[in-house]
Length: 356
Image (cartoon, rainbow, N blue to C red):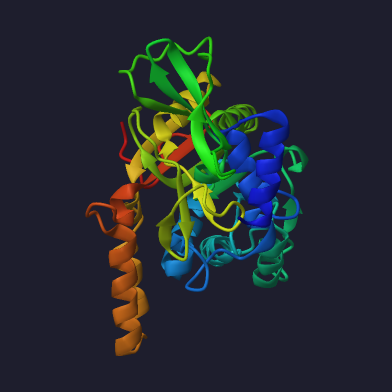
């Protein structure tokens, strides 16, 4: 058992089983043993690879999208450009390059919301000289219009899970098995207030932290202007099923096997996020499949332009990246990942989304 696993087991022995949301929060954010506190999880030597790490084209297209929104919100000076969970800073670095090429002379102030000291160090190296500022949460971001980027951010926010039984929805918990190991179980009493319809045995995920954050962002965008672009893997329609998963060494793993040593995520409920944003008076566009979004922004044209000065090996790598980003086969990034835009009411249609 990992050090964090032993600490969680002791916590359960003392206070009883804990919810999935608390388990996720401990595994990912524990101040000493938390997954994101102790490592760089990205790349071949890590546990997963994100789209910005696959190709510079991804961030450049997001930068072009940002340039358009910058114009639509009146070219604020400076532009408050926020990224939530910025990884190594690769997306922001590529987006800034494209944004500054599209809007020469624009003053841009990058603001990065990050809690991982390891990843913040990587971001600082990537964004040296950009004037970037770091924040632990949304509360310290400057006021005014903002453009907010969130790539693979909502999937790692804690969720609660409930299983339908004859007596109602019982919360799924992490407890201790006969040998003292971590096991899944259910709260003995049904949780009041859950009125979702579902067959017995159905598993329901409630992304309370993500919904609260979306409501906070939507209120800001409605009142001050700007837009949020959220890119993540998930589903468009509400449904049942267990999408909690662990990743270790680019492979799926048992979520309870190595607390703090494996990434924990869940599939994002885009319908719930959209509903939360709309309830605050914001406008929602999408979600669109990542493939459709990137192609609409000109991914193929960007790839061809890059290949004009590329070696044969580099051109092959560019083609491979385009395929990986847009692969719409089962489990491919092009269809698994979705893109959602949230904005103030006055912004109008945004690039990458079909006009309603």
